[in-house]
Length: 87
Image (cartoon, rainbow, N blue to C red; front, top):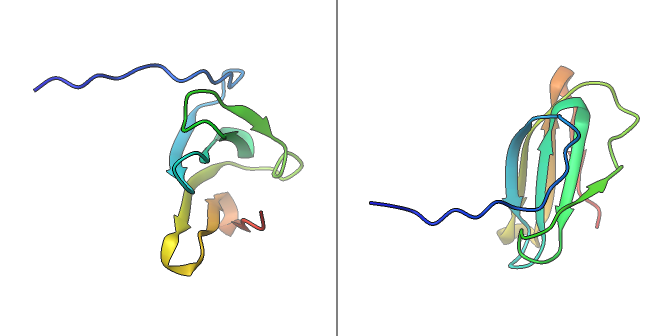
C-alpha cells in the first residue's frame, strides 16, 4: 500500500508538533513544543500561529475535539496543564 501525503504549509520555527485534531471539516488545530498552537481554516492546507498559550511555560502534547459535545475542545500539556477551547 502507498499513501499520498502532501506537506502542509506550517512554519513552526523549529518547534516540534505532537498532535493534530480536526474541529470540523475546515478547522484543524496542531499543538507542540513550548505550548505552540497552530490553526488551519482550510482543511489543513495552511496553518497560522495561534498565541492562546504563548505566555504559559511548558509543552502541549494532545488536542482533541468532541463532536458529541458540540465540538468542545481541550489541549493537554506539561505539568497538568489543561486548556479548554472557547471558540
